[in-house]
Every structure is written in C-alpha cells, then in structure tokens.
Image (cartoon, rainbow, N blue to C red; front, side, top):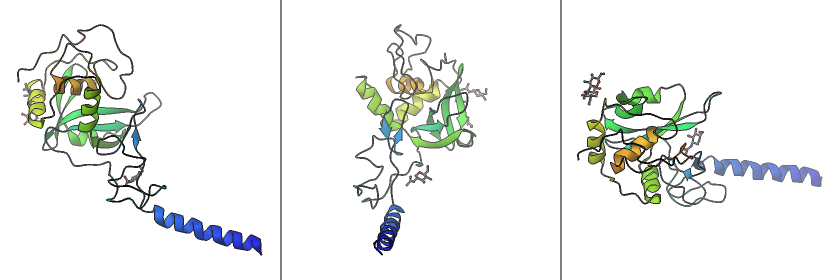
Length: 214
Ligand SMILES: *[C@@H]1O[C@H](CO)[C@@H](O)[C@H](O)[C@H]1NC(C)=O
Ligand SMILES: *[C@@H]1O[C@H](CO)[C@@H](O)[C@H](O)[C@H]1NC(C)=O
Ligand SMILES: *[C@@H]1O[C@H](CO)[C@@H](O)[C@H](O)[C@H]1NC(C)=O
C-alpha cells in the first residue's frame, strides 16, 4: 500500500515538473574559453538565458527566453558556430553583416564579399548569433579602444574587401579580423574570442595590414 502511494506521488511530482519545464530557457552557450554567453551575444546573467529571473529549474522565466537566432542589421558582428567534426574542434566563424544578405569575412588570403545564406547553409553550421557584445567585452578586457558604431565598422570593412589577408588559424583568423576592424590597430596583439588561447610574442604581428583611413 505505501509503495503504491509512493509511486503515485512520484508520478504526480514528475508530471508537474514536466509541465513547468515546457517553458524553460536553455542555459548559456559556452565557448572554448569557457566563457558563458546567451544567444544575444551577452554574458549570461544568473544561470539561464532569460530576460528576467527563472525558478531554480530555469523555468517560468519573467520576460521569456533569449533566443539564439536573432535578426541582424547592417554593421552587426555575426558569428556562426561550426560543430565539432572528426578533424576540427567546434569554432565560431565571425564576420560583418553588410545588409541584404551580404557579409564581409576573411578567408585565407582574402577579405571576401560573401553571402549570409552560404554561412547558414554550411553543413557544419549549428546556429548564428549577433556577437557585438561578446567582442566589445573582450576588447574592453584587453584595455583597447574601439568603435561600436555600425557605420564605421561597415565602412572600414568595405574598404578592405578583396585585399589580401595574412590568414592564420591561430593568430590571424576571422575573430582577429573583427578586432582589427573595431580597433583599426595592426600593431597590437588583438584578441579573438574563442580559439586564440595562445599568445604569440612578436608584435607588430599584423604589419602587412593597412591602417584604414576613416
Ligand atoms: C534550446 O535548445 C534546443 C536545442 O538546441 C533548441 O531546439 C531550442 O529552440 C532552444 N530553446 C530556446 C528557448 O532557445
Ligand atoms: C559585394 O557584392 C555585392 C553583390 O553581392 C556588390 O553589389 C558589391 O559591389 C560588392 N562589393 C565589393 C566591395 O566588391
Ligand atoms: C572584388 O572581387 C570580385 C570578384 O573577384 C569583383 O567582382 C569585385 O568587383 C571586387 N571588388 C572590388 C572593390 O575590387
């Protein structure tokens, strides 16, 4: 008899838990640096990606959940997460959104005038998010001065479309490109956010790049 009551009350508890949890927010997105972000590109506040506070299960959150997939506007920094494969770690490919489905990105040896659809339809892409907040935080942490102005960001990026880019997976990748555009600084060791764990001790490391005439 006691056993039956126990099973029964467990069932009730369990189903009400599920009911509440149908409106739960995901926890944050953790980068290779173990930094925790939400889908709007900002550091996680509390434990879950919600606009207001949640209960201890991450459910019934005030203001709803922060979704990963945001719409972007000209001059935004957007990142698409490429999933881990047998030969590559997961990483975030970053670029400047230039409006009308166009992007500006670095690929080996070139600043490319590309397409957002190609990024999203990449078979390895998990999701894409706005990363303005992530980059601004990182540059602030490094004590660097930088612009947050979308028009300036876009103008600088457009100016170097088709220029050569000394691409290097660790020290001159798509994330360093974003830092370069935001700071217009080629003489400092500029931070990426995800895969640049290694600091290379030979500045001016980017002297091949132009200083962009604002
Ligand atoms: C939580 O993550 C799952 C799996 O990635 C996804 O399908 C779902 O849309 C996410 N929910 C929210 C509120 O972001
Ligand atoms: C980039 O491509 C678009 C068309 O997709 C074109 O209109 C624009 O002129 C190109 N920009 C540069 C700088 O090549
Ligand atoms: C960049 O290269 C593309 C194709 O290689 C070309 O169509 C475009 O006009 C070039 N843009 C500039 C600004 O040189």
